Length: 100
Figure 1 (tube, rainbow, N blue to C red):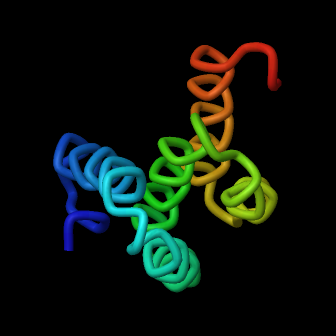
Figure 2: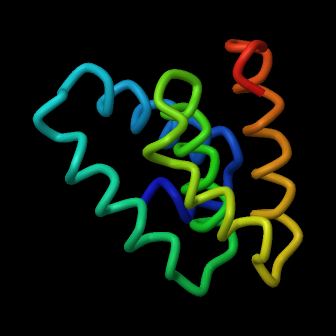
Figure 3: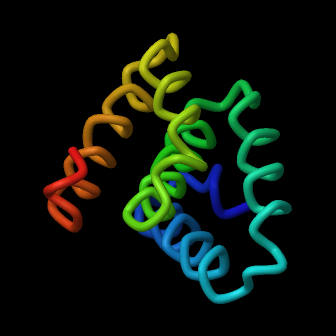
C-alpha cells in the first residue's frame, strides 16, 4: 500500500493521486471518503499522516467533506499526523485564502 510506504515521495504520490481521483471520478467520491475514514483508524502513523495529506488535497476545493479528518488528526497520539494537519491547512489556505 502506498500510504504506508517508508518513502515519503511514494506516500506523496499516493495522496496526490487520491485527490485527483476524488475530483475526476465523482461517482467514487463517497468510496474515497469511506476508505480514508477506514485508513485513519490504522495503527501505522504514516498511514494516518498520509490520509490527512489526502484530505488536504480534497480540502483545497471541498473542505466541508474532510474537516473531520483534521479535527481527529489534531488529537493524534503521534506528532506526524498532527503536523500533517498544520501543513494541509497551510496548503489549503494558499489555494483559497479567503476561506481560512
